[in-house]
Image 1 (tube, one colour):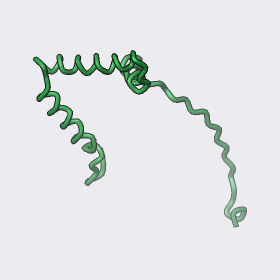
Image 2 (image 1 turned 180 degrees about the vertical axis):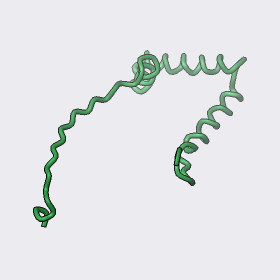
Image 3 (image 1 turned 90 degrees about the horizontal axis):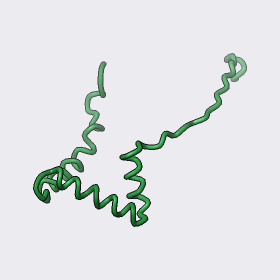
Image 4 (image 1 turned 30 degrees about the vertical axis):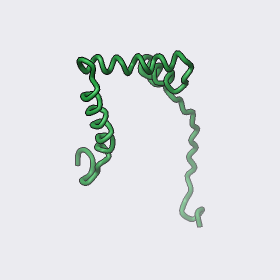
Length: 86
């Protein structure tokens, strides 16, 4: 069986929000979509420059990529017989 199980709607969860943003961009686009997106980017960058940490994180994540989280784990395996568990 390839892909998600029947009835799995996980991929569509963000679709409504994405569609709403796309509709809003089309309604408020100054000349073309690129101008609207450039305006949003300039606004986020201005917020970041004014000290908005959330905006700054967004800029860094988009420019540098999201930070990699390293996990250090130690796993130990112990063999037990069924008699040991009783």
